[in-house]
Image 1 (cartoon, one colour):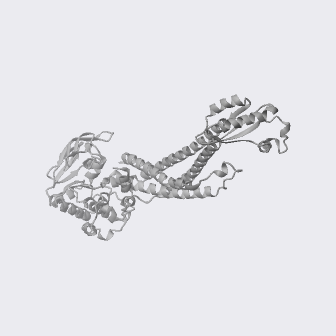
Image 2: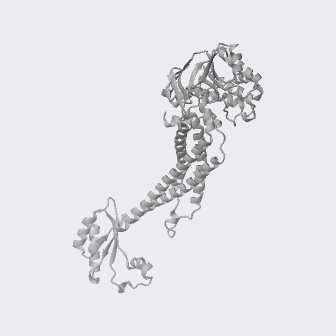
Image 3: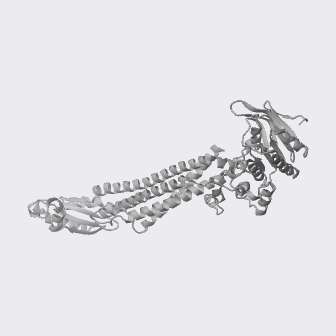
Length: 223
Length: 300
């Protein structure tokens, strides 16, 4: 699905990631941990071609990202559902239109029933016409997840999806991700919430990766 | 992809692309206003250009088909040389008509300078013979040589020295009018580019979100291109109608008013300004599309 080979990334103020190699196999579930500023978000951005590596190769669906045209990048992102840390929405559009956005921009029709089911699945069935600024942090996180999966992507990359929500909501979001993984989706979640990781490992065979000293390591079993 | 396909894609009926970009504020009015004002000016430049063209043609044609033969000779030879000149002209191919001007006609010609009571008999006035050219025209040099042989005091003036500078001035004026239209359209393109860039920058976050969910550049650009093209078309249409009304309100052409009162459109010429709004829209389409694609590469 997505492969990193000796990848490095340099923001200009020093190297943030160095000699990173990782392969996300189809249907796998990975957690990515590490302290704030360690490069988790950068790693995810490399995974959906938002950033290009300064060294090494990132391959998405068997294509090296540097060889992708801008249209190719757009097409690739339609196969990757991304839940952003700050849940970026178009504030002038209602929630339903925001969730449908990946379908809208790719010119695919959306069945009203599917949208209703999806919003119900994330517990936002009654907020379809609400504007994003009126939503709470948890509602925004769930809406972001709904938007990430509406295209039926092969891979879901989530950046701190439970960062702004309480424990109960975290568990609910985790449950959604676990269900998606059971449906065959490849999942990579960046988080520093160890309790969340423990809960997930009790349900799915998730691997835990840790960014430390610019490199990615397989985290210990004590997690 | 052909230009037609691009246009079809840009103005596809779904309108989804336009909806994902937030409604614009004052830039919408500024674009329409700029397009309207520029098209208004372009209508006048077009009127100037067409009027100058008509004038150039009129002067060229009117003067090109006539000539004057001036006979300067002692009084006792004037009649004989006039008859000789008329005889030469009668046998010259390409001369449709030739006649000696009467004393009264010559008096009228001089009246603007010397007044109506000019005593022509007391002055050594040359005799003037008016020549009308037929098709396909006469051999000027050959006629000059025959006149020199038959009537030494006769000089052929085919108005070339008057006609050429006038026609050239009118042609230059026509060119300036067309150049003005070109500059107006270029300025409109530049302003729309600036407005489009401002709109794209203001919507940088929206563009980022759209790119992240898989929107192609062409999809995002379409929203801006559609918006700016339609605004320009509407503004330019209003400007063209206002310009036409302004030209229509100008005083009618008359001989005394000369060039200024002839500034307007005639016949099918009234249709020319209607070409300006589509032309302005085409400029807006090209300017916004170029600006959008450049800005998108810069932003994401």
